[in-house]
Image 1 (cartoon, rainbow, N blue to C red):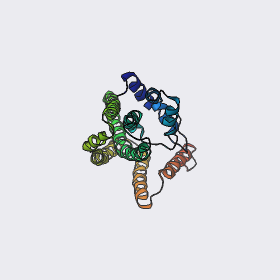
Image 2: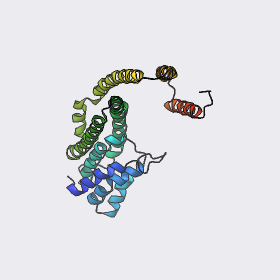
Image 3: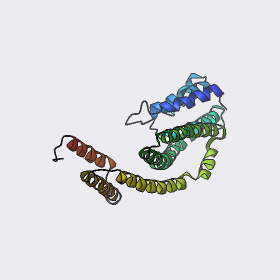
Image 4: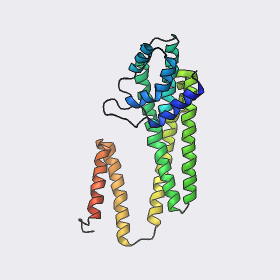
Length: 249
């Protein structure tokens, strides 16, 4: 296994994975930056080191929260290659499939479920006047995320690709479905809290229009598969018009 200092260096660099994203290679440059300390340690020979860096010269992309796990598995495989226990050609097919699988899992669990849960919960707590509870919850979730990143990195570094069996037992996909059900309930609670705020009659009309627009957006997104960017542009345009008082508001 890699020395602790080098492993921690690689883990720290995973926070910078998206600092140099390109449209062609995506996280290509960032991944090379993450793995650089370990590759320099594993391949003291210049030619072998050049071949190792060349293996990461193509497209690379995965979810940022899953990057430590991805980097740990890749470094475990690189250790086997460096000790001639695995052929260099074996890494190419594994790396592409692994990145796509972890990206889908991260998008579903973190971006599609856990992050909306945090936003909805904190919004509800703030409307209830529980600002310190919202802050404490945010800090706890942030700490939990860092623990998850470190745990998955070092577990993958020690056990290699077999760590995917452990990840499968966590059953994150099914947890994502349960969290989304909670998000639906929190959305209803948040709507009730907003409607409970004393307001003039026009504010009630705006609230009702916003709720109808949200439901219509969800229906159009599912039925017509319209891109989310289109809805964001429409919302931004409506807010600009409202700010300029063009619709007579």
